[in-house]
Image (cartoon, rainbow, N blue to C red; front, side, top):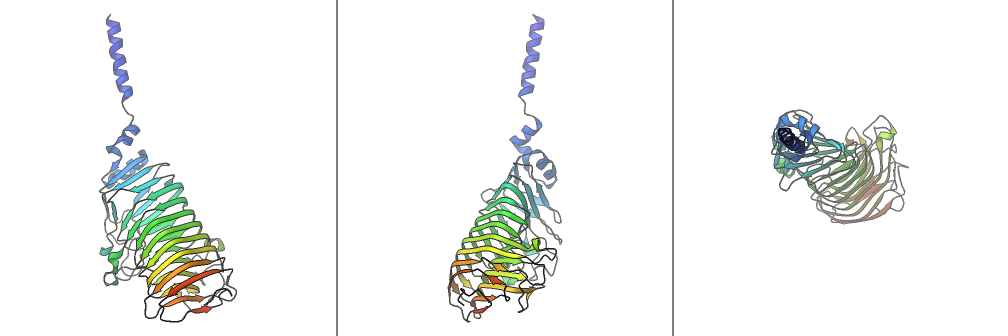
Length: 370
């Protein structure tokens, strides 16, 4: 009788212990997978695949480096504030395969840009870049509110099969006294199979700048205050492969109160490269101060020289359904500066009103009526 009772007690205790969650299961069930202190970051991201970052303060001079396990879901809640320090950054880096990163309703990533801005952007006091995304495998990053970038906001670098959806990149506070500068919305480099959709950028530089990329779609993006929908190709001098933009498409976007609507520039001091099969379709412009469509092959050392080169030919370019209005006192609807033999095979449909100066075109394809 005694042995049977003892066996029953042992069996009951064993069953209770077996029913307890393992360490990883405990982490995945609740509090231990919520990051509220910077010191928790490393242990949580190495242990959990369902993570919440809630009301976090990141020390100045430190990167919130989220190297997520495959398949992880991470949610930002409340305000994540990045401390001030004069360094290169990035303040936040997100990487992983098949990851999902979400911003909960009301959440904010605050870069405290006003504490850096001096009107000199990349010059002046040293300012960190804000967000770097290096993801792959069908990753989705959605609903993130990026506020007051010190300088470049979101670098999409070395990504493959990634979607960025419903982002709000807001640097509009940098308009005050023209202190915000070099606050690019999305910079895209060394990336393939990318979709950016249903997002808003308010800034003082390129809304989007594509440097090196293939198979990219940018859809329903609302840009204001900056330099428009841009390609900037040829900055790398290492090889032709470093300067290829191919199969990139802007669709159903708006650009308001900006210097440029569409801006394509190639760097004549860089290596050779190509721009091929790029399209802008159904783009609406309003309040454009300088150029509605600006295409030039004459950039050297970050400046236009007026002397175009054909080291990076622009072929298969389609700009159709581009409409809108200009407001600047020196505005031009269309400015094209191609080198001889540098531009070919374009499809053209542009109707922009209100420019104060006549269009100016050099060596454009014969079907492009300037």
